[in-house]
Image (cartoon, rainbow, N blue to C red; front, side, top):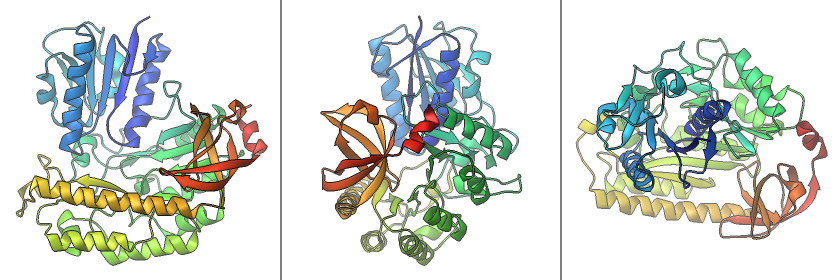
Length: 441
């Protein structure tokens, strides 16, 4: 049986799309193997947000070809969309597929025999009528499902390549969304993670929005929960907040990009809010939802970011009631407006600032986890046995461990937290939600 290994670089949206690609191979009799194993075909679903993501892709291609020089290598996705010629020159790459084409591997590639030169299939980014459905499938080994409901972006952030790579904002039509959502529940998934480039923009051109589609989703019978992967601060409105506060089917966790705590830098980034707006939103979330988990994206080293600007960001985040940070070092992206801005920050200085914020994130997360001690959390327990412990995530996105029992796999269980160490909450299971278990039976 021909073996296929898939590797995802980048965001949760990419994971949902990789799974859909993998399912195409499974349905045709191919075997999906772990990326570390020897495979006949390697498929890379790529990211272009940072230079490091592109560099990692090139390194991984070379690594798998050293492992198996006869392997057929497909590089697909955002990096392929924007720099197909560059990728085609990497020795051993056989096919380059853009953001549309990666869903049509078997229509475009008649066989998987190595040839020279590379085949390039890249068309312009999608419009509002072009939506490649994607969600977790049998190609994943997960208890939580990634579900793509939106793609593309109409925003013009000066640092971002995504609109060029993925095109305009567009959404899965509401009827298909509900049908696919029900299918995921029927497969036994207990948590559905809604993914997209700009999930909060869902519903454009369909006379609906994220709040209203969430209302339809939580009306579906069964006990399950929905997690929103990331949402822009200007699109996280009071209706969504109140829904999360009042309904346990919506996770008590939001990941909200900030990017900078400096008003000057936010303006240069062409973001759609002010620092004070962001602060009010975080305060609203904490006052509305006890123990809410809040993640924040932030970029350091943007052109023109002085030490004072960075300290504005650091101090703002230090005083903010949040759970953790995702810290990105600014990377010059060809074709973006930010490339031409003056005030380039030294690379070593960017790394220093990144480390300071990552250290702050560790302290924030550690404090948040310790605050959970003595509380009861509902945790979706996963399949892995970690040295006698079963692991899972709570609704508010806390990593929890409890004594392993095989019957607990893929259950939503109530866990009382005893202590926290190494960014894991250790707990004792007090109840299993049998009503939820019946969903998969």
